Image (cartoon, rainbow over all chains, first blue to last red; front, side, top):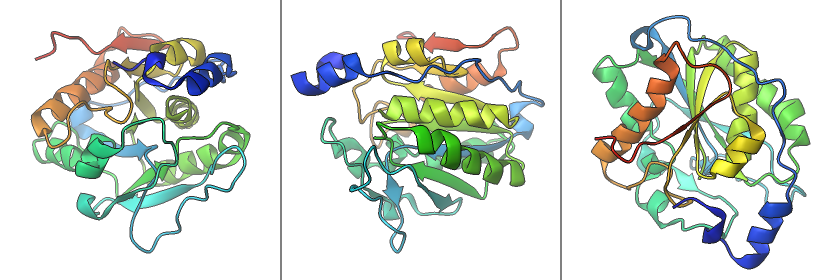
Length: 160
Length: 87
């Protein structure tokens, strides 16, 4: 069950007291065409990187707000998970990265026509960002610009 | 914190005209943050699609998320529960 009781007492107290950023006003983009015609992109916050990519930087205060581009044809078994949090069990995503970056599932959706197509690239963040100012101001808008450039219609975002 | 990060990125994507759906593992965070479209799943952290190496189960969760993108009656913010009865 995903609730605060999963965590150690210090983590639970931190999360209870944390000032979660309220999205106000709520942004809203209605889907413009059937899903079977939409281009889908994935965003994962499991800090996956491919061999040769720059690792996420654990020394950045407040969390590394950068992202890595994962090509649409990436082999899921090559993804290396590097999330810094010790507050959750990493075993599942090590066994099967699709659990948090479901690229194989998305390919299957495209193959059977449930979605129109899969974007040529997807994005990987390291989700443990306690100070999200630079994410809000810099990298989330940059991510949006990339997907707009790619003519992405819909996105599925998966935390861990 | 991952629940917050996906929500903030989703908000920005929607601002740029891209429809989004986020998986959420902490309902109270989603209630406080109000991502545009969220599917709360009752799985533990690290297991957002429930089971590793179980394509069928992962598709079931993804399908529930995709349904939120398709329902024209929904208005923001959307916070749906992954139904226990979902096949």
